[in-house]
Length: 170
Ligand SMILES: NC(=O)c1ccc[n+]([C@@H]2O[C@H](COP(=O)([O-])OP(=O)(O)OC[C@H]3O[C@@H](n4cnc5c(N)ncnc54)[C@H](O)[C@@H]3O)[C@@H](O)[C@H]2O)c1
Image 1 (cartoon, rainbow, N blue to C red):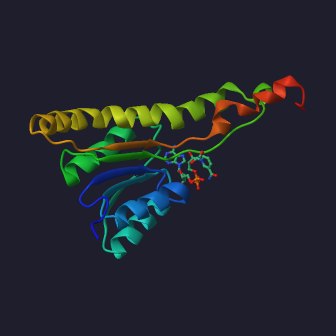
Image 2 (spheres, rainbow, N blue to C red):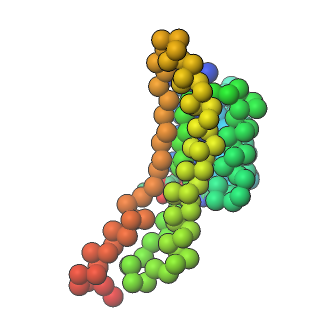
Image 3 (tube, protein in one colour):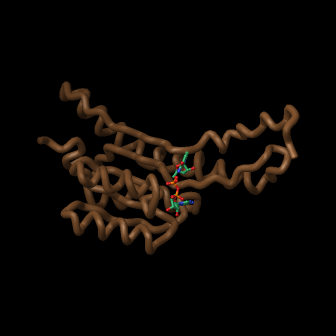
């Protein structure tokens, strides 16, 4: 049976463990060529080794997605290794640092926005010129190739505990 992601270049952040790692392993099993990222260099290297041992293709870029230059490095690594075509971007790096709204400080708010919104924006922005150019060429050639961007976050980041404002807050 044909693999779903045969030859497709995929970027996966937060690939050191949890959902990001599971996604990276699945994408690789389906034939994807993966650039893995995680802030934890040991864990992301483990994911890379696991994919390679299973016969897949993976490279890792260790680093904090919110740090200067890391989003661009992830994209550039994919382009250098796999060519100027990026098919899947899975922004999965993240964490929860939630609390009742009246107890959340600006540091928590800013950190969550950075990891769940700013970093994905920067990765997509860095990839956009390649995606646009390829999509234009494909359109001219009468081809339609679907690419995917997956942004994973959590409802807990949206201050859903603000319901506590209405009475049950401690
Ligand atoms: N597990 C759940 O039930 C659940 C539910 C809803 C949403 N989510 C969201 O899904 C995402 C993944 O969750 P998980 O359960 O797999 O978490 P996890 O903690 O198991 O894995 C997250 C990975 O992201 C990495 N990471 C964190 N901050 C990073 C950064 N700044 N730069 C690069 N890597 C970073 C961590 O090192 C870790 O390897 C998170 O965004 C989380 O908020 C999880």
